[in-house]
Image (cartoon, rainbow, N blue to C red; front, side):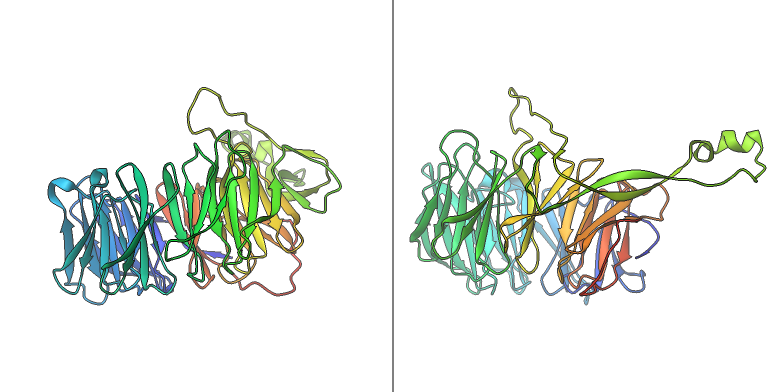
Amino acid sequence: MEFTEAYKQTGPCCFSPNSRYIAVAVDYRLVIRDTLSFKVVQLFSCLDKISYIEWANDSEYILCGLNKRPMIQAWSLTQPEWTCKIDEGPAGIAYSRWSPDSRHILTTSDFQLRLTVWSLLNTACVHVQGPKHCSKGVSFTKDGKYAAICTRRDCKDYVNLLSCHTWEIMGAFAVDTLDLADIEWSPDDSAIVIWDAPLEFKVLIYSPDGRCLSKYQAYESGLGVKSVSWSPCGQYLAVGSYDQMLRVLNHLTWKTFAEFMHLSTVRGPCCAAVFKEVDEPLHLNMSELCLSDEFLQGNSDVSEGHFRVMYDVTEVPISLPFQKPPADKPNPKQGIGLMSWSKDSRYIYTRNDSMPTALWIWDICHLELAAILVQKDPIRAAAWDPTCTRLVLCTGSSHLYMWTPSGAYCVSNPLPQFNITDLKWNSDGSCLLLKDKESFCWASVPLFPESSEYSSDD
């Protein structure tokens, strides 16, 4: 892997959908860099500090949210002189997003008073009253033709279907939720999944015409659903809950065909490979070197010894670090708070929030645990390569950790005092964006060989 130098950032950073550019917020400035030459290609000045940014699907436009001022600004890469500012006045703007056609912006006002669709082609705008959430509760079909927007009125949750061409409401139906949490179209656009807030375990599958295809409820007492994710192939629906279980539903009968438990002690029989992060001391023969006392005092690493980070393959049984959440505080750190499918839908990784240093990788084809990565520090972020079965994660240390079906290994970051707190892939899987607290860099990643044998060395 090759790393660029570190560049300053004070907020969000993200690749463009076409992987050609990277947008970086530096206070009130929006910096656009070329991912090949690393040069600045555009520099835009906003009216206040940038809180969040989002690229349009065609990579031609980008919007900046300014939370300190209830407004957003949009910019064009091909027409730098073109500007756009949206201000809802006293209603404010809590969140904004692009439509699939890259020519409309959807904004949600404060207190969820209304959702507004703004056109960049003319001055027309469309209002949807009473959106359920600010940043959630909106989902687009994969073909970009329709939008499902959750609303609430008369103490009841509804789903409104809008055409992304005319932005007219084509239909609306009530859903059987106590407090709707979020919504998502299936990858083939044939179904809509809706799940309830954590106080009640309820996952509902609806057809676009409003028919309830299935209602799934694993248990009635206790906190319920924490995370939901469709597989890229659309055949599986993964549901992570507060009871530290991952349940997978099939798209034919909408019944569970797999339940994976996250226990603090993993016992046999188990075919999973357990990779544990360890520090291995480097034994350097310095007996023939003449070092002064002042040098040794000023360089503590020499006197204390050097280490390299690597994975040690551990046998089961193994006990994983477990943190019991306090019973008297809300939003307990337990349950499946992080999960994601691999591109081929064969693997899914999960993190049980009460065991934040362990990442579980499940094999859906064999319905078994494939691997466990046990880190020294809590896992901050993890992401699958968008082109192959390769997983990358970070823990706030100076190392990257990678897993493939062939094994796991650690990659040292050569930048000094650069601790990786977040990471993102670009769309073609050739680059990784790595973030520190006040800086960022990106790393070029070699293509994944089909038959590779990775070692666990640094």
